[in-house]
Length: 401
Ligand code: C5P
Image 1: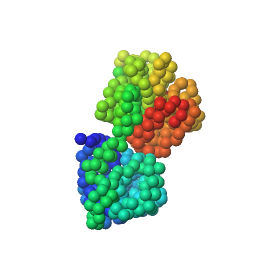
Image 2: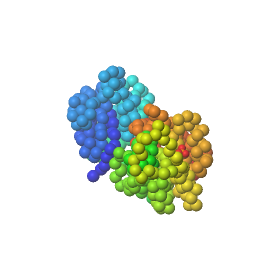
Image 3: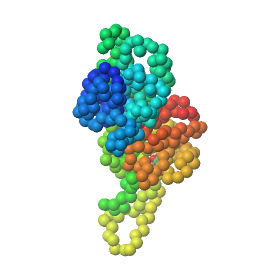
Image 4: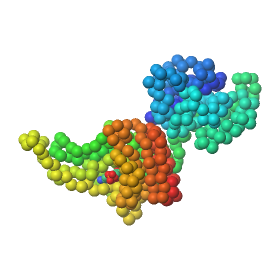
């Protein structure tokens, strides 16, 4: 039984008779737990109606790039960011050519240009079109751009010929799609992660905290599990469910998070500190609810331990990855943090009223001692997978990304 739990699959359907199999594919992806959105090209819509895909996916079907009503609901940029994987099945010879050229004059090709997500194509065409040199060259280009290719199979074709060019069956495509997430890049590694905010008690009913949702950390935990790691997630209070197979330890305060990290760190070879740990806690926690008797109230605060810096300073420190949430001078502050905390990698992002915290998307800058890499705006799930791959590579070849 394959699992695509919580995955967002954008299924692109282009013009080929094999499009009839895509209806079954939607069902299989949904049964495996995925959310599916279908984008039809004009050719695809000649073979299967939007209504079929809408009924099966439970979501509106998009097809026009310049449809103001559709763009208002979910624009091509939003669709490009929504997707974890874009699976184009069937991918006709024409669509493959358009993808190779980087066209953006219809919705599906524009989404493919605008996305950060993995793209996979399931070619379907007449066997002569498949062996044609133009198709060969287009596919070669797509491979160089890391676009995955599922199939095609060989056999009887709708046109009456026999040969390569048959789209794979729905169950094969669903399995290959699930395999995209199981990269194995962290197999054999033990990852310790912190996520979410901390809460620092003031009295029995009040606390100091911040707006961290925990989404970035939970997305990395999920990606690390899928990459084959054993994952322990030490989490401040969040509304999120722990990803399957992750061991979650719930804490509230920075001190509790520190204690839990120190208890587990010796067994871990990678430490990723995504938590928004409160820098200060009240010196005294009132035993009873504080009454509003005075016009002003002064809270005396003391520093919390810097969990990340303390882990990085351990004698047998794991590979340590910290986050830097900044409101300005992102790179400069992040580089200072890389050095002052003595960590192996810093992942920096801008934060503010409407940026990053509580949102599903983020834009990240990754800094290591001698390297930097910018990750374009994408969903935290997509970024979680990209970060996991980068961390795996950096751990295995220290000092270069
Ligand atoms: O110093 P600053 O709080 O900006 O550093 C952010 C990084 O340090 C994050 O990775 C955060 O998880 C970690 N941190 C920590 N313990 C603290 C404060 C921050 O682990 N007390």
